[in-house]
Structure formats: C-alpha cells, structure tokens
Length: 395
Ligand SMILES: C[S@@+](CC[C@H](N)C(=O)[O-])C[C@H]1O[C@@H](n2cnc3c(N)ncnc32)[C@H](O)[C@@H]1O
Image (cartoon, rainbow, N blue to C red; front, side, top):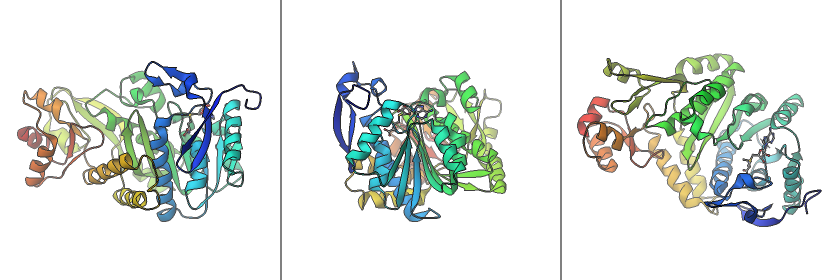
C-alpha cells in the first residue's frame, strides 16, 4: 500500500541504490515485461542508459563543468531510480530535483528517497516537467545538468530544459519515438521536429541527427549553442549527451555550419551529408532529408575519459561489458565523423555483388589511405571518408 494507492511492490538494486518498483508480474506481455503497463514506469533494460548517464555526468563534472558542486534536474522521474543514482553515485552533485506528473509515481519516489536515506540530496515534486523547469529558472536555481527521459518524444520539454540549464550545462536526452525519428512516420516527424524525413538505409544515424538538429534549432532560438559529446542509437532509443553554452553569435554560427540536409540516392542505397559527394551523383534520383545536424556527433576526448572512468570509479556497473564495448566503438567512430555510415549489404545488393566482410572493407580502405571504421549503429555498416565511387569500386 502506497499512500492512497494499492500496489504490489518489488525491491531491486541498481548501481548503488535500492528501489521499490511496481511488481513486474503485473505487466507481463507475451514478449516479457511491458514497462508502460506498470502503474509506475520502470524498465530494467534501461539500466544501461542510466549507467551511461551516471558515467557521463561524472566525466562532465570532473572535466567540463564550470562550477562544482552542481544541481541536477530529472523532471520525468517515474520511480526516482535515475535521480537517486545521480545523487548517490556521482561525486560533485549537490542536489537533484526530481518530479513526475503522476501522483502514484511521486509517492513511490518518496518511498525510494526514504529507503536510500537521501532526503538531504533529492527534492521531489508532483508537477509537470515544464512547470518544474521554469520554476527552477524563475527561482534562479543554478542548474547545470538536466536529464529528459520521457516515454516517447522529448520535444515537448526541450525549450524549458534548454532555458533552465546554466551556461556550460549538460543536457541529456532520451527519445524512444524512433519510428518517427527514423522516417517511418513522416507527417509526425514534420509536426514534431519540423523535418522532412524518408526512411533510408542509415535511418539510425538520421534519427540521431534529426534529434540533434531539433535540439540545436531550439537552443539557437534562445541564443544557446550545443556541442554533442555522446550521441547514440542503441536497443530501441536515441540518447544524446551534449554541453550547452550561451552566445547569440555562436548560436548563429552553429546554425550556418552544423545544420543542413542529407541526400539519399535510392537506386544505390547511398545517403550522404557531404556536399562534394552530392556533386558526384548529378543526374541520379535524389531525396533531400532535413534539416538535420550535420556536424560532429561525438567528442573523442569525452569518450576516452568515459572509458577511463568506467575502468576506475565505475568498475561496479553491471552493464560494464556492454558499456565498454559501446565506448570503444564510439572512440573508433569518432575518427570519421564527416560522413554517414553506409550499409555494405544494401549497396552490394544494389551493385549485384556479394556483401564484403566489413572488417576486410575497413582494412582495404585504410590500406588505400582513407579513413574507415566500423560503427555502433549497425553490424553490417562502415564509416569512411572514401568517395562513393571509391567505395563502390572496392565492393
Ligand atoms: C519513461 S518514464 C521515466 C523513466 C525514468 N526517467 C527512469 O530512468 O526510470 C516517463 C515518466 O514521465 C512521466 N510524465 C509523463 N508526462 C509528464 C509530464 N508532462 N511531466 C512530468 N512527468 C511526466 C510519466 O508519469 C512517467 O513516469
């Protein structure tokens, strides 16, 4: 029994916290747990997302934060597990503001804060996410990290999050509306993110760049600019970690330099954000996609520092092997950021050739003096700065 609500609870541990969650047996679907059916949302598969979040916040605090200690806001907190983890696992967090619009979630967060004896670090609210963010801004609370982790699209919360974040603050965003971001629901993508999308072979990177482009355009409207540190598409969601700075001039420069369009050539299953590549496809059927973020999506130094922290302070994380694998892949990918990934299987099929093994392709491209890497986005894709002609020839 929780406040006025009847709910069977289970106790789970994650990172260094213990939390009550609604009994998972109440939400069993044929494929397993369906977190959205629980009276309060808790997805055990998102432990990975939360592990990466505490790791990234620690790296940010140690290396990039303009001030320490800091306040963090988690305005869509559900059980409060993420807020508690920020409060109890990251050095330099002075306090976390956590809120959920659902009364029952609020009461569960209350029990979990008590369970972890964290009343000195976590303040909780039962208000709309945007209300909390704007109230903190009105009260001049120096917020240096905001984590927007909704069920679906983060777009409705972006303006308030960017407005509340102090100069140099860290923005972390999850989006699970991947069908929209990847271009399968075109009119929704246009409505929600203001982009024209088509599903392409590199739709996962397009999803990341659509969200980043949206964040950047909202930021620019408020004289802010963003620097992506980690951007991924994994499992079934997009996750962005970015630093947000204030400067009208830099915001304008960001719009000119980092926002643009991708060109998709359906016959050859090739998608590009490089202007010189577009020239080489003159005459071919072309589909324009955007506006999107066409700048760098990863910061190599931040990824390397995250790897170091993972081996050090965060060695206890249960998802360490998966996190390590991802970060190593991102470190490699960060070397080739000027072009989208390419699906070798689809291009080979368009050329009526067999799919070459991707490690062999990477080696051959490097031997020819090009940059080339594998990618976390897809197991049969590579990233390279070789031109399409060179890539096709090699295939
Ligand atoms: C995906 S869950 C959050 C999961 C949580 N961040 C975690 O790591 O476990 C989304 C939560 O947002 C809450 N929510 C939905 N709309 C909201 C709004 N406008 N303001 C505040 N909370 C909201 C829902 O009640 C739900 O608990």
